[in-house]
Amino acid sequence: MTITCPECGAEFQLDSIEVGEIIQCPECGVELEVLETDPVKLALAPDEEEDWGE
Image (cartoon, rainbow, N blue to C red; front, side, top):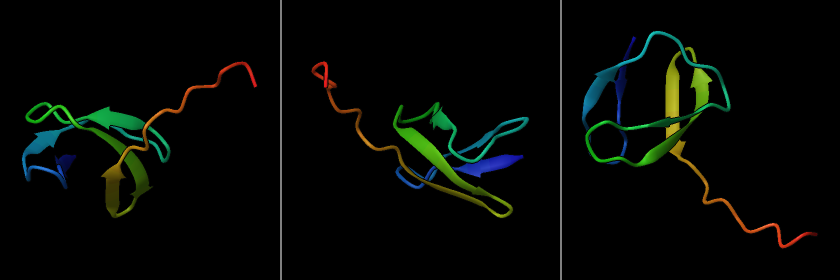
């Protein structure tokens, strides 16, 4: 399937993806979260926050 990066517009191929999966754009390196698979909807992945043992 062809994926289009919402950040840089690059198109790249992936065999399969799942909702909630984090993928990385091979062009700009941004991390993207898969929100939907049919049709494919991507968003910038949220930054991981420190746990600090809580």
